[in-house]
Amino acid sequence: MVSPATHCLRPNSPETLTEKARYSMPPRHARLHQLAQTHQLKALMTIIRDQNTPRGDFVFYSDRVIRLLVEEGLNYLPVVNKEVITPMGVPFQGVAFEGRICGVSIMRAGESMEQGLRDVCTSVRIGKVLIQRDERTAQPKLYYSKLPKDIANRWVLLLDPMLATGGSAIKCIEVLLEAGVKEERILFINLICSPEGALAMLEQFPKLQIITAEIDEGMDQQKFILPGLGDFGDRYFGTED
Image 1 (cartoon, rainbow, N blue to C red):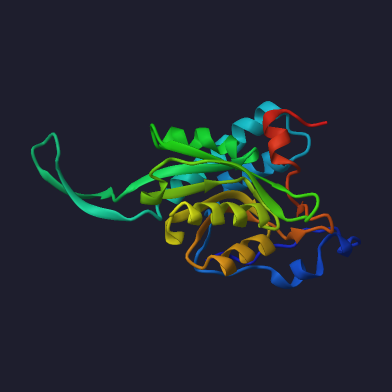
Image 2: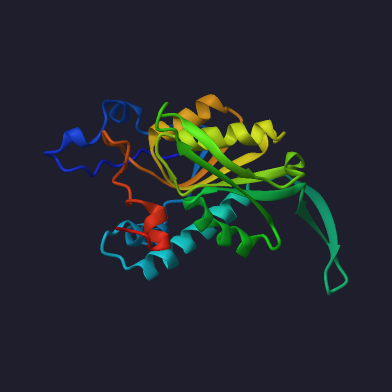
């Protein structure tokens, strides 16, 4: 369960948030999981939100948060009991993960999260999906998809650092469902989400799990997350104007 968000908008700029955002904060949903708001996490998020943070530091500290998210995501995978024998010759009753996993990154920003997944899950298979807005219809459109052949039999960690309206992520989940992935086997791993985007995804996919670092206050009229951190992909890959 998430804790109430704290408003930090400038008093003289109420127009920066949409009306919907003001009345949808904070979202509470059993399948929306926020990382524990520790001093360490808040410090890391402060660094990557700072517009003056150099790219090298942005990448380094973003990677740290991404790894925390992946580790937390693994907590929502099922386990089975397993007994092992320790070097002392004593049996230990533990657990082992049940089933196999894979990652799917939403290009391009989602590719920044792939290494964090590999650092935790060695030899993990990773698929890619490219979704962009159709200029004619203004709707998300699938341009490219390459998924593991046996993805229908796996748990999927869906990777995308920023969740604004949720349009691209929702379209990607539709692609996964068409490939045979069960909705309850999809974990959406995300750094920052807007309340509108998170609620839109969970309303459409009630069996989905979302794991995020922070839930922001909402979006502006251009659908940019506030307070946000800018374009994550540009800052991470060094392609800012």
